[in-house]
Image 1: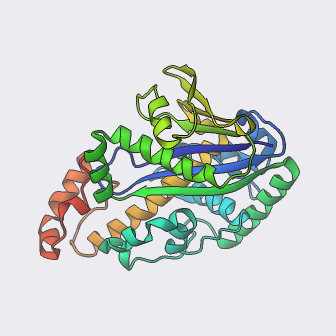
Image 2 (image 1 turned 45 degrees about the vertical axis):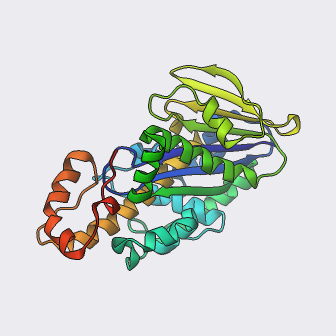
Length: 320
């Protein structure tokens, strides 16, 4: 009766806003090819937004489900219903952070654009829709023998992100260490059953053995293939083997897809609060998604206000 975990991130490229990494934990009543999760949980979970219905949600790469034009509807339907199905209700901006990354509260409250921000959730669908969809997911979990256990995020705000970049010398290593640290925490609380982990690849990295050894120092790391498409490792004691694969386009697998959705949703909530703070103080300021070219425009336009408020750049600007 194995556990299946998936990870993904949002916000790797921007200069403004946080980097968010999420791991989801699933349990199956029997060994299962992770590519079959959608099949086992159909029709409650589908892979494309066009297939979603009043009783089903789409779970896929967040890039498929969200654009500035499409809005948050499909992210909220899938993620918030999944969280409610495991008794992690999200009804406000603050409760979303509590449900996904309660450890970030102190760091978040230290930033003025987050400290007093609140809004009701969901933003793009009705609460009754979320309750109905959560009931549908619970039924699917019971019927299929595949159930969601947990969704855990790790959020790096700019000051911490910059400090970690200085320590590790590249943001690729920051992503890898943060992901593996999150995984080590997640598997530490699981039962004595085999564990299968699928992560989206970290940039162009093909080799992860040394990184795995840092985060799982008590276990021998066995390399079972390293290539551009996928890199696979096995570790752990004989009675509880763990296999971890880093694969391109891992979001096609349900555990990684939901991780992608959670990371994107938290990132979008963070940017919503960030933009609300600055647009309320700088007349005519256009919101930003934080990507490099527009981030420079945004920083120039808030410069006078930023100086008046005494806000240091390291709280805002990610160096890589």
